[in-house]
Image 1 (spheres, helix red, strand yellow):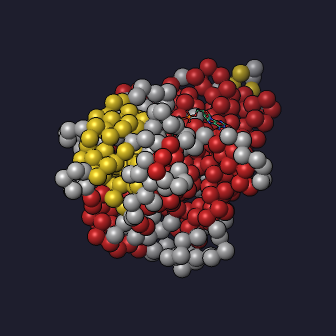
Image 2 (image 1 turned 90 degrees about the vertical axis):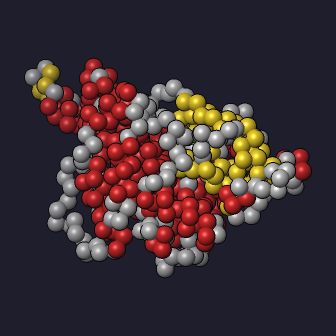
Amino acid sequence: MPAIASRQVPSRPFSLTPTRHHLMETSGFTDEQLTVREAIFKLCAPFTDDYWLEHDQTETYPHELHAALAKDGWLGIALPEELGGSGLGISEATMMLQTIAESGAGLAGAQSIHANVYATQPVAKFATKDQRGRFLRKIISGEWRTCFGVTEPNTGLETLKLTTAALKDPSGDGYRVSGQKIWISSAQVATKMVLLARTTPLEEVKKPSEGLSMFYIDFDLSQPGLEAKKIRKMGGRAVDANQVFFDNYHIPQDSLIGQEGQGFKIILHGMNAERSLLAGEALGLGYAALGKATAYAKERVVFGRPIGQNQAIQHPLASAYMHLEAAKLATYHAARLYDRSNPNRPDYDATITQHAVGVACNSAKYLAAEAAFTACERSVMSMGGMGYAAEYHVERYLRECFVPRIAPVSREMIMNFVGEKVLGLPRSY
Ligand SMILES: Cc1cc2nc3c(=O)[nH]c(=O)nc-3n(C[C@H](O)[C@H](O)[C@H](O)COP(=O)(O)OP(=O)(O)OC[C@H]3O[C@@H](n4cnc5c(N)ncnc54)[C@H](O)[C@@H]3O)c2cc1C
């Protein structure tokens, strides 16, 4: 378990020794967040740029990073202490994911553990005590890994229309799942899946958000009726993404989390957490790119002076930095609202509505993803030809930074949400 778990956090341990080699301004963060940041940088240090380059190019899973994080207890950062977790919040988990990405691991490194942190949130909140104990301890210890199964090929962002069905097994024992999922990260290495499936047909429910159920299932590719096929993709190649096929796949009754038919509401609890984590991951990628580009711009001499002395190089990087810093504020504001809206926390604030949490998490994800894209694109361009060389790493970051722009919800759908639900404009779709 990480030192943070026991809350042995010295007061302001970093005020005298600021980390100068990382670009993000860390004033205003809590001691716990700064402790997480310092410890994760240390843990990630052996995973060098060359490690991530090699794993990207050979499409090899970073098992060693997952194992190192599990060994020190980090996978349970936002899970309850009685299960072996640290009992911290999404504010600290976001810092952890950001720092992993920022260490040079990029989105691939962060994504290798990402679902274990956010997809377990609704399990921790809505499962029975017995289910929680059995399901979450092994995730925290690293013995099991989880993937998240929501997106479907024929329905995409229209989640409420998803067609994967979990029907009661005629024998009376559990359910049979049939249907297809797509883009499921880590399905090749996962032992569990958070699955959203229809238990009542769309035509038979009053509202489309009803009749969906959330399951925490064994994801056992050796069993009949389950198959995963890797998708070739642009970036984050160290971590697999998959098409998943269910054909009458049996799951026991015990895999149902919460009430049947209430799965959409339950899974939303994990989705806001995911937006916050992904915002952090985008920030980490952006700062990492900017770190490489500024170092290069100081050293690379053309026309008798470092390229960074030219304002055409310096200004785009400076403005990218400011955009990252602004997105950082939005991200940690959203994470704080998420945490403080939890009635089980001592700092619970009953005035924070779930609507406010949703707006903040969506906005943060949007802003951080765009800031990361700006930082990565400008970093590549400011490094000239070397920006395009795999050995200089920023091309990999640029390929990876499209993911937070697309997933788990696209830029356009966030605009639709803010336009309608915040500005009160007519629904556009
Ligand atoms: C690398 C990667 C990993 C992923 N991992 C997972 C995972 O582990 N689990 C999981 O469940 N999913 C995962 N996803 C899926 C991801 O969440 C979806 O790709 C994302 O939600 C977008 O859905 P879609 O690709 O079906 O896009 P579509 O729904 O087909 O949309 C395509 C485009 O049309 C736009 N569009 C659609 N409707 C509207 C509208 N009304 N107004 C304006 N624009 C609109 C969208 O914004 C988007 O740009 C992953 C995706 C990627 C790329």
